[in-house]
Length: 627
Image (cartoon, rainbow, N blue to C red; front, side):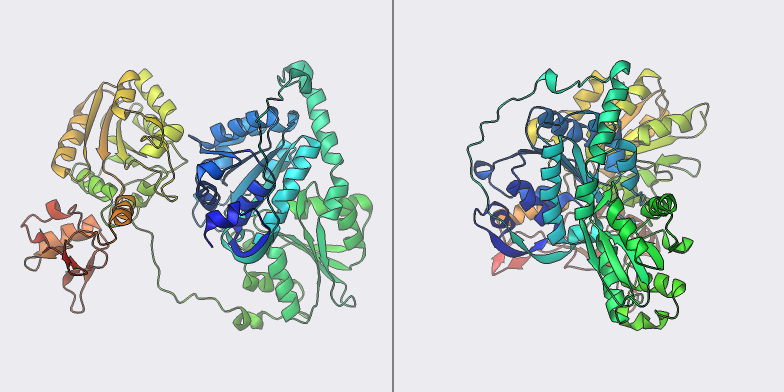
C-alpha cells in the first residue's frame, strides 16, 4: 500500500510504518487542519507523506514555508484563529524560529498547536547536535518524547489533545532513529467531515499583545498551565520491573529507554526501567516513587544532563536517600546505542553488567569510510571547479548550508567557515572589513537565499561591502529531497532572482550556466575587481531531480556516458581528480576509467580535459531503442 493510501485511508488499518509516516497519519487522524514546515533531516518524510495525498482528498492545508520562523508564525496564527495546527522542522531549525517560539506559551492557542522537532543526536545531518529539551524549559512549553514509531503516532494524538484542552503549544521531540525506524503501527479510523474553516479569533481570548503590563500575568498563566500537567505527566510513564533484590533502577526516555530495557533483559533483568514519555514537566510523583523503591539509580538520556540535573534536585528536595549516578563525561555526545548503554551500566555496576557482552551488540566498525559527495552532474561541482582557477591562497571562502556545504570536502576545498543557514554574506562582510588585499567569496544556494540570505544582502548593499556572493542556483531544495521552494514557480509565481537583487540595489550582477566554466571564470574575475558588493549566479537544474523527472516521462531515458579517447596525461588526470565526479574511478591497474553505471552523460566534465580526451560516448541502446 502506498504512503498516500496509509495516510488517507478512512478505515482503521495496521501497516509497517516509518516513524515520520506514523506522525503524518496522526496529523490527519487528529483533525490537524494547518501544517507548515521547512524541510530538514530527519523530518522531511512527514511532508512527503502529506503531499502524497491528492489535494482533492486533503482535509488539511500544508505548505513548505520560506523558513522555520515563518512556518511557526503561520501555524501559530492559524491556531489563534481556532484551527488545530502543527509545525515541524529539524533541530537547528528551532534556532531560526526561537524569536517567536518564546512568546507562544504566553498565548491562548484556542485551536491547539503541536511543534514537532527532529533532533539529531550524533549530528548525522546537522552542523551540531544541540539538545532542544532546553527550549522547552526556557519557553515553558511541555514536551513529549516517543521511543518508537508506534509511540510517535500515539503521542502526537496525545499532544494534540493536551494542546486543545489546555490551549497551549506542545512539543513532540523525535530523534533521527525514531523518525526513520519502522514498526507495525495500528492506526485508528478517520472522521470525514466538511470542515467549514470558521474564523474563531477574538481579542477577548487574549491578550495577544504582550506589553509590559501584561507580561507577568501571561507568564504566570503559562506556569499554572504547566502545573496542571503533572497528573498527565504521571500517567505518561512506563515502568518495566526487574529483580527487585538488586535495588537498581534506570530512568530514561525516548529510544534509549527501549535500548536500556534490551540490555537489562540480556543481562537477566538486573535493573528496573522507568520510561518517561513526558519529559517536561517531569512526572514528579512517578519519579519520586521510583527513586524511593530503589537503592541506586542512573539516568540514561541522550546528550545533555537535562533530566539528570532536575531529578537530582527533585530527590534532594524530597529528602530521598537513593544514590543517583552520573553518566561518564565521554557519554554525553552522540547516539546511545545498546553497546554504549551497556558500557555505561557496566562502568557503574560491574558486578551486574559485563562489558564483555560487546559481541552481543556487534557494531560494524570495519566498514570502509563513505564520505558524502555531490551527485554526478551536479552544477555545483562545475561552479566550484571554475572558482578554483580564480581563487588564490589568500582568498577567503565562506560556506553555507545545503548541497554546497559538501564543497568544503576534498577535492574541492571550497569553504573555510560555516555558522548557520544564510550566514555567509553577513560573515563575509565582517571578514572584508579593513581587509582590501584579500578576496572574500560568500557561497550560498538559492533555497538558502530565500530562507535567510536576503537580510545579509541588504546589509551588504547598504554598507557597500567589498565582497562577492557566488549564488549557486539549482532551482530546488535539493539536500533534503527536492521539496518545493519559493521563487521557482512551485509555490506561486516565479521570482526573478537577478531582478530582485537589482531592486535591492546590487550594482554588479552576472549569471551563467554552471557548466559554462569559461564564462564563470570571467565573471568571478570581474566581480573581484569590482569596487563594492557583487553577485555571480551559477545556474543549473539539480541533475538528480531532472533525471528522475525525465525517466518518469520516459523510463528508457538515458544519455550516453562519456568516454576517454586516450589515456589522460598527468595534467588531465590531476584536473579530473580535482573535478571530483564520482563517475571517474581507478581501474584494476590504476588507470582512469568511467563508471558507466554512475555517469549520467551530462557533459559537465568536458571542459576539464585540456587535451580533449574526455568525449561524449556513443548513443546508448536501451531495450533495443537507440538513445
